[in-house]
Image (tube, rainbow, N blue to C red; front, side, top):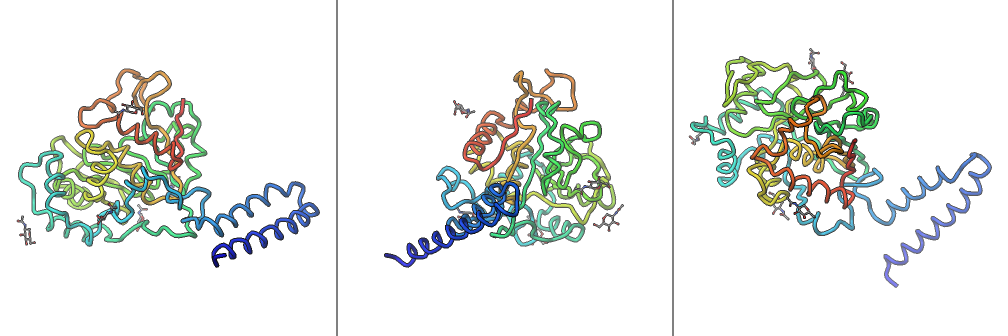
Length: 334
Ligand SMILES: *[C@@H]1O[C@H](CO)[C@@H](O)[C@H](O)[C@H]1NC(C)=O
Ligand SMILES: *[C@@H]1O[C@H](CO)[C@@H](O)[C@H](O)[C@H]1NC(C)=O
Ligand SMILES: *[C@@H]1O[C@H](CO)[C@@H](O)[C@H](O)[C@H]1NC(C)=O
Ligand SMILES: *[C@@H]1O[C@H](CO)[C@@H](O)[C@H](O)[C@H]1NC(C)=O
Ligand SMILES: *[C@@H]1O[C@H](CO)[C@@H](O)[C@H](O)[C@H]1NC(C)=O
């Protein structure tokens, strides 16, 4: 018999004794011991036998992950930019510059150097370990949130990621009131609370120049659209989406469908890579098949499915698959 098997049997025997003993004990001390008991026993046996990769009930990576997921999930590509990972391969740089066809880009490496004189240059959240349990909510802007009453559920997460316009005031019962991370690009920017991290998705070198400007001099007022020249945001909490990660998502998770991923999908992918448990709200259509925002009345307006640049159907399929495989919990709203 292998040493491993013997250890297992010993651990089982020990567990069995503890179960018997503590059931006996609990039945004297607590009215309903089973609840406490199974919670602890199952967590304990999880850590003994399955070597969970986090301390939540479910972890993003599990020992028995299915091949579809493991073929795609690459934890060594970091979602956020630091000086160290800011150097792009030639292929990535070309792809990234092509996204919005910037005509005369500034010198990228000089811009990046200046950027990290304004915002922190830290590697964030890549600290997965068996003791960590980081729960995250990704809150999309779908009309299916209207009347869904998810506010409490959303607010109970450690990290709450919202994107683009995402108004909260007046919608708290349905969408919650806390925002730890707000994902945006220059053309969709809004002012933020001091305790919210701004996550910028750059589509071009000018976008990096814009965030520098918007936090300092306010000189850039226009990209391909007029943009906010100054933004209210805590510059100690500004984070940049890494173009290398951006391309990894497009190549690996979307298999090059659409021109580039939507903000919603890019935000979901942040959570997948920095969280242990991910709950997803406000994605997809409402019960009538309409695509609109939760703050809009217009059920026909739906701008965000067929914008021409995103493959919303393909993205939603991948999202559904992640839910099927218990990698995310998808709350479909009403
Ligand atoms: C994961 O990403 C790293 C860094 O980009 C790369 O070197 C590695 O080959 C990737 N692994 C897989 C399995 O694709
Ligand atoms: C950008 O600037 C760096 C020096 O800061 C220089 O070495 C590099 O050649 C420049 N790149 C381009 C494309 O001009
Ligand atoms: C940020 O601060 C506001 C009030 O200043 C508070 O309502 C909110 O819960 C805080 N958000 C987070 C994520 O802590
Ligand atoms: C925002 O938070 C930073 C620390 O992260 C602090 O230095 C700054 O004074 C705060 N600003 C406001 C307006 O509260
Ligand atoms: C989504 O998945 C369904 C069934 O799995 C498939 O029939 C459909 O073609 C997929 N759609 C896209 C856009 O890939």
